[in-house]
Length: 142
Picture 1 (cartoon, rainbow, N blue to C red):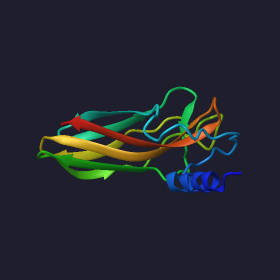
Picture 2: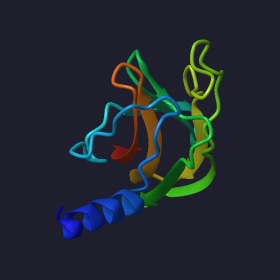
Picture 3: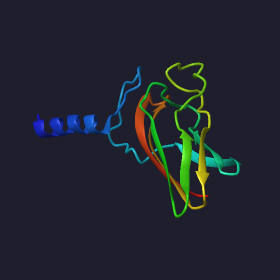
């Protein structure tokens, strides 16, 4: 047995913080955090007030008890003044550990420029029975 491989695999799992679903049978080591099905969009609600929306396809869900992190920052004259970035939403009717969907997150800005959204979001694929942390980065012009 190659102990270096086993040790480095164990360390990799700890460093990347893979979180398993309660009923998981497998973890796909080859899937990267940058490759994910999460879609992100923003909508202007009124002058300077926006909503950030997160979407997953059918048979996927965001974990309720996971340590999700989302950061918003502005550049080129845009300043984020307030942001409510905690994931909330109704519990999935068939899988109570997950959100059925995530409600839009609200934030306010001043000025015009680029908005950078960076996050680490934990989602699960119900068909493959695996949970994966996703590194999400997206830039918007406001």
